Length: 453
Image 1 (cartoon, rainbow, N blue to C red):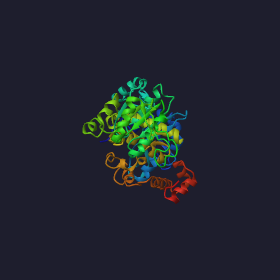
Image 2 (cartoon, rainbow, N blue to C red):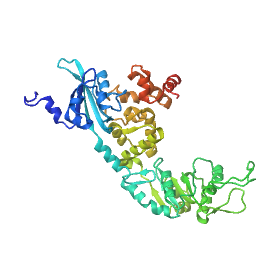
Image 3 (spheres, one colour):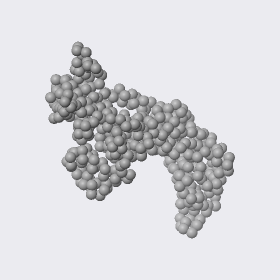
Image 4 (cartoon, rainbow, N blue to C red):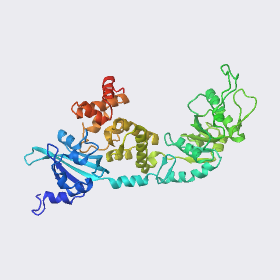
């Protein structure tokens, strides 16, 4: 259907809220609508005729240009999250989509790009982040907020605490928060994994031994209870503790004393005990796999942590939190995750819970040089059964399919990223190094050593 005579394409472009601009094959801007001027802070008369990279100063202008990819691949690409730099120095997060531009005869004449200002969304995320925080715990879920609300009172007491939750839900983080909020915060926090050691080694780790207690015991060795002193001892995976040791732990809780191996007199145990497990201790106690008297002695205060799949509203907060942490540790300036990455992660069930999400971001930081974390920066297992439906630029054989069949080791991931950067830049080494934020020597080692570097 033809447009009415009094409505032109220029009129439509000026009426839309998204920024729209077009470029010719020399990357010079040929049209620039009102919304584009408002978002970028560049008037249309100053943008026209200039190369787009000189106007936008985008985080992808140096190697991952969407318009260039659209034109080279002759297909539209959408929903890439990047940031642009305004003349006043302000970084503006935007979501961009692009497509090749052809004349009436079908000849390629340039490209068209639309972009949407995401500043309000990012501001909302930052306002949400930090509304409910204790130590490094961030949340906006009702169940977690209730737990955080009682932590100060729990921390102020000396009662044993039992923290329940699946692996990766943050049980040790809660234990440390209780310690740091308590009057014992200036004293040691000592942790031990009860499921990591066999029974005879675990006993000596917990309670220590005296010289001569066994053949190789040449001198006294203090156990974890002695090291904790009047601080806090964290017994992780308490459900895996052997039954004979459970008897000794029960005595510690009841009498505040224990006997090191080979000792002739008891030793005081003033430390506060916080235990944690991912097992159903009540069921284990009923089946005889865990002492019921120890269970009820530990279960004075019980904190049950929800799985991440039960609080998906926390995923954006945790993503921002982990990105900020990794930026500080790595010295990078990653802006966050793109919209398509966020949508994928919101649908993912996270069997590894918060720890898995943190590992995903750490992996993505290795592959993402700057700007926003994209789908191609994620571990390949995420881009299989849980990948979003194929859309523009994500059809079979596109980015998602390529990554899904990609490397399985960190070294192979580095090698693949290096080769892909060189391919995008036509073999120009320095351009690839700038995109990857590495030196020429590092790139050479990666290519020579199959990823080592």
